[in-house]
Length: 171
Image (cartoon, rainbow, N blue to C red; front, side):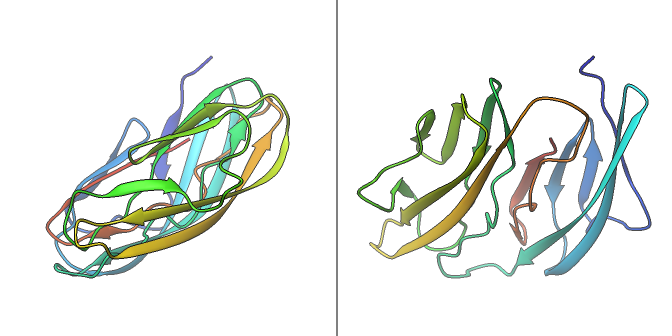
């Protein structure tokens, strides 16, 4: 029915971040690694998963903090922002291989999005280049699942940077 109730279980968010309507947002107040347990409830079903958020110090070099892609669902639209703080903006994102991206997936600026017509596991490689010309590559596995029961599909939560806005949508 599209109604999801998210909550923290046996854990807490870094100071400065909050969970509201499936979105973790705010500005972290101190660097470090934070482990959180999340629970989602919908239509009488419950799912839990554990995540890690790394908050980087200011002035960090160009660093991939998007460590995993959220799972996609067959026939459903999917979108995720790729997060790479550090280095001087603006950032340019591009597929990292000549093979490009899997069918149905597009990359526009830092937004990776698409609709999937086949379940499975697909390799996705993206390179980011900062304004100084430094680059960093990240290889992901994208899992596309059949539609069905409620589950936590956000993969890993993106890391954040101290004193910078943080935003992660839970799926």
